[in-house]
Length: 326
Image (cartoon, rainbow, N blue to C red; front, side, top):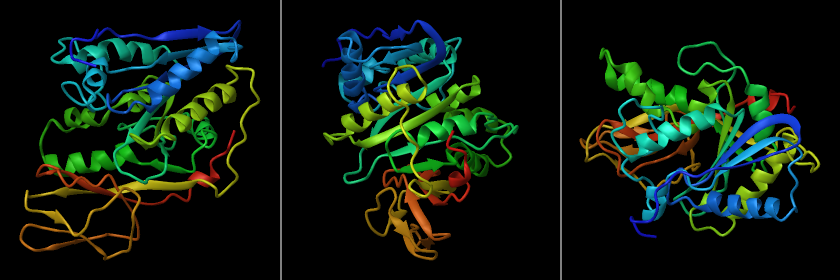
């Protein structure tokens, strides 16, 4: 597609005859992550053809959240939509205008499934889950059990929690005594964080590598399982994964790149295992950067700018398996 393609915002809602939850499912929040778009359109075709009846509640589909990025085949249009997502009184870029349309739409729903893909080749799908129930100031939440009951029914076997808390620790460390820490923290708010802030619950599903033909299959399975679990379709409720079948990880540490000369000791991929003390990178002055603990590396970014996130570390989350499956 070219940039002159229509850049309107588009959603489709199907409602059943009986009361039930209101789900919303997003594709192409990042324009080069199209597996969700493909899967959403396939499920909509099934609904339109009568092969998938909507029995109760409603489901809203947004096949392409960011039409500018989708038209260009790029992650972002003018900036990353999945950061600093909130309505803006004076929108400054295309993603701000998306937010002014999307945020009220999210707030009108109970449950969000946001379908993504990733760049690294060979990784397996995983789901990003929110915090445990809490009444703190960073990301208060009270629907952990419902959210995680859905996570174990999407059809994937790896989950990651701890994004906002770990990101927030990094922001506070970089800001020091700066007075605008809370403003900077808003940069960590994407679709799922905004959804939780409005009283709903939400999951981000990373369905596989961008070009993997299996990624749209993963996305479609997750959509169908979500709708069945919520009772929106009449399909049987999918079973939860058995205890211990989900590899649950909690992000706990973010390490910044301090200088353009900082480098990794090898090409890392998300979920590579690391041992405590194992060298991950080397600072520009030759100082080694070891793993603080035995776990897994996440989101390594060899192109990170100085004083930005270089990589995250995660450790097993023993509490996830004790969450009621619902």
